[in-house]
Image (tube, rainbow, N blue to C red; front, side):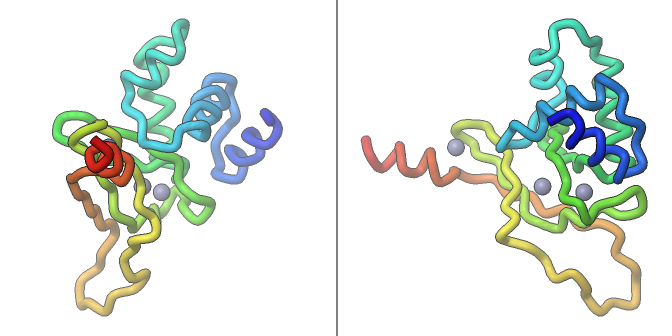
Length: 141
Ligand SMILES: [Zn+2]
Ligand SMILES: [Zn+2]
Ligand SMILES: [Zn+2]
């Protein structure tokens, strides 16, 4: 397992230090986007600055993408096609007002190339509403 993560980090030109492996491992086990405090709570012994720096490095190297949600930033692992030059996470991010979880809706994606006379480096699409699980719970009551 660790070997696999090591290789993933090396492929993204990132030195596989132990904290980076741990954070990567934790993020890969999460289905939803996670905030710095949630990651911090998971690691009792690591300090906030170290985790924050790890996430910043991951973001620069195309390992995670961040989602700005009011005052909180959440992080989610990227796919292999993101690298240190470009993030290709051109999908909708969805925030559920009930369970307060943010998910990547990768089935709703934007066109890879749009013909414009200006250059688009990044697109952020953010939606708020009620997720499928919470909708189901609401209807079952
Ligand atoms: Zn990315
Ligand atoms: Zn929900
Ligand atoms: Zn995403």
